[in-house]
Length: 245
Length: 245
DNA sequence: CGTACAATTGAGTGAGTTCAAGTGGGGTGG
DNA sequence: CCACCCCACTTGAACTCACTCAATTGTACG
Image (cartoon, rainbow over all chains, first blue to last red; front, side):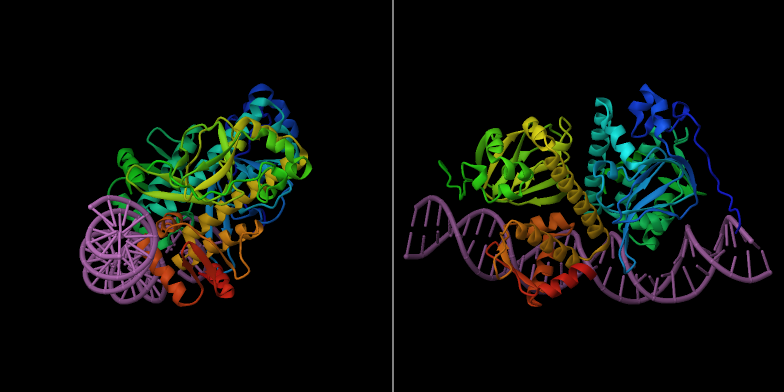
């Protein structure tokens, strides 16, 4: 109970030396003058797994850039039905949306999936920062455009793809995002902490069916998950499944 | 062939007298100085049904505010699978997204569903307009926030609701949007031009099953569609289905 | 060693699909 | 004015992907 040991990995004091800041929303500023970002940082936080960071409908005055660990954005109804809109990985901003719509309620809740360390900023500071220069505004537009594209892709997935196709799509999406951040090993494997329950809620399936589909893909030698690590064995087959199914 | 007769309804010359402009993205400007909007308007356009207005992946330099008629935003794959992201009704802006991400490629295609009349604007002009005043920026943030919320809702629908629930949700959403624009009659009925095929593509179902579900709801006395007009007979039941199923 | 949670497996069911055929209205050409 | 056609809607029957319920195994942790 007392003093629960978090497996955390704290960011360096200076954002200039942070291997993650180079991929965060404020990366143009980090490239120019990293101390500007450090100066705005209000805290470095260690959060245990399963903690709620943002509650749907509330107006957040604080937001976090993940340094290590994963989180989920989700909506939950009273009857227990849940939908996970996205997985947040290191470098992602918890509630980037708040930068676009300051003072408007959050469209989803955010919860840590693993122990997490993150850098906290006041929403207002971040709003100023990301609108404060041409390169930051471009970066923001790029990030939002990517987000919109992602959501449209996900809508298509849920409406028109099979369980296998959706799973393949999700795996590739996460792999690509982690690859940019240099978090994919040479053997095409990477840390993958979500439970099958989370995959089910993200893909609009049940845990049981996710399990069967995962087993099927494993037996086919496409990819497998072991000890919170996902390894892609047959990239080509995975691409094909993501495209066609 | 020659001179196909469009059933069009042209907007008035002055935006100040336009019953639709009051609900468009530039409504704060219309309230203050309607001639500003009129001045930016490059054309009033009549477009027949089935015409493509925007092609996915292209960078649009023009956008349109619908005055009459409907359009759809959609993605289509080579194999024919299609997903309709949203229905656009009078007052909506074709590719409002372009205002947020100028010079970035459109995330979906847009096609007219019926004959349409619309006001055309240069993207750059519109970008300036909607960022040009505090009230416009607020309105833009509000519109985008609503869009994001809508997309999250739709994601939840596709992942976690039955065909009946999705259909009910869609009908209520469109009713509410039309109601704001004063396009819903006293008997809770409104123009509804989409084919069952479009509903299927929007909801991730097949036309056949949409037909069966529609028939079921009609027999239950919830709502019915006749001659491109939808009438809600039992609002309470519809709300319940949208909530619970 | 016991508890708790995650993954796995089996059997039965059902929501939604596929294929195929039939209906009905509105427009067009003869 | 009628015949024809086209398109959207409708219906039936067989099928299957994914769900539900329920039990079992594996694993981490105290």
